[in-house]
Length: 327
Image (cartoon, rainbow, N blue to C red):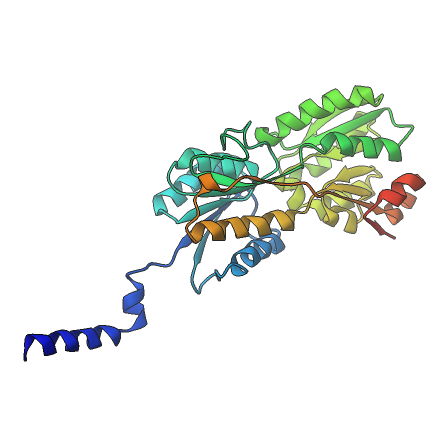
C-alpha cells in the first residue's frame, strides 16, 4: 500500500472508532459534593443543585459525574471527607454548608471550590474579598447570620410580655454557633430580654433541650442556623407544639410543619445557585474571577393555627408584613 493510501485508510479507521474509545481522551468531569447533612436528608436541595447544573448543560450521569460525601452531622468527619475528594482529584468541590467549606479550603489550594454558606466568607478565611475572591474558592452567602437579631425582634413582637428567651445552637459547629451567640447576647438586653444558650448536636438531643427550657422558665426560642436543625425542622416544629414553646426559625418547612414563625432566605435557592456557579467553573471560568454572590432575599412566614394554639395574638402590622400566612 502506498504511504498516501495508508494515511487515508488510517484516518477513516479513527473516525469509525467507538465513541467510548474516543471519550477516554476527554474524561467526564467529576463534581464532589461535601456536606455535613445525612445522605438521605433534604433531597429537594440536591435536586435544586442539579437543576442549576442542568440549566447550564450538565446532567448527572450523561456529561458529568457527582461523588457525594456526607458527614452525617458529625462535623469532625468533614476534613477527612474533603481530603478524600481532593485525593480523588475531582474537577470541582461543591461545599454546601459552612463547616464543609472550611474543610474543603484546608484540603486543597488547587481544586476549584464553590461554597453555599451562612457565614461571612471573608471572616472565615475562605476568600480575600467578595468582589475579588482570589485563590481557588468562590460561591454564595446568605443573610442567615445577619438576620438572627431580627428573628429575636420578631419573636419579641409576638411575645410582648416575655422576659426570658433562649437560643438553640449546635456546639460542634463553632463557625455558626459562636457568631450567633455573640449577636444575640448583644441584642437581647436592648429588647429587655434575658437570654440563655441551649445546645443540641443531633435530633436525639431535642427532648433534653425542651426539658432545659422548662427548667430555665424560657418563654420564647430562637432556633439558630445549622444543618441539624434544617434537616429536622419538621421534628423541631412538632416538639415546639408539644411543649407549647413559641419559636422562630429560618425555613418554610418549620412553619408548614406547625412552627409559629420563620424568617430567612431560601435554602433551595442557595443550592440552585451553587449548581449554576459549579457549571460556570466546569465551562472554564476561574473561581478567582467569580465574585461571591450575596443572596439578600428573606421571607417572613406565620402560622396562625400555631399562634392560636399558643394563645398568641399576632399584631396586625406584623400580619400585614408576612410574605405567607398559613391558617
